Length: 220
Image 1 (spheres, rainbow, N blue to C red):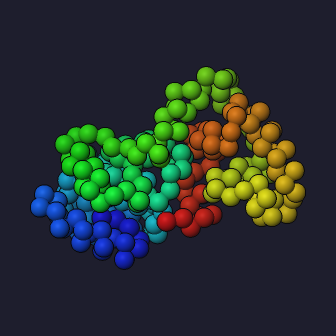
Image 2: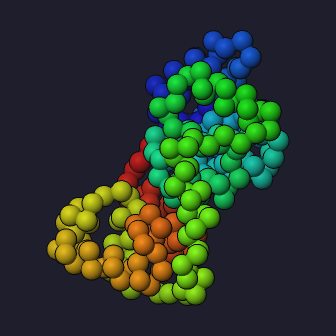
């Protein structure tokens, strides 16, 4: 169990230990420690948060899957952001669940990934699945080399943190109408129709990274 909040990880570990078929063998507070302990202990399943010190959970999950491919990884997050889910899918995780999941459902998910299944929360992943099947249908392939200017990049990266146009305007010292204009230009250049599609596109094309978003927000 990997989470930088001691109360959450220790409490969840105790709950898991109460189950006859599941045992929480160790807890970790950051991604680097998670990789080290996985190499040493070879657990069947790793539960891991996303935003943590030293290394975020998605990068840690990617490395865990590289060095211990038999270990299943479930990301347990408080956030249903599409770009988090997409990054986790690309990292090869076995599941993405929200921290609000009932205890019994989490136990069932652990058993399922242990058995070789994939478990993604529908609330968190539904939007990504739709975007993955339709997002490229409206000319995105033709604009992969589109360039955003510096202000548009600032607006889009701030949007990725989940804040409103008004908050973006305050951060950048511009008006909300100007922010709206920037979004219109961003959508046109990237061939998308929404913030979420623009953020997913930017992450997939390396315009900015998940680390950039985490650093701006400090999200857990």
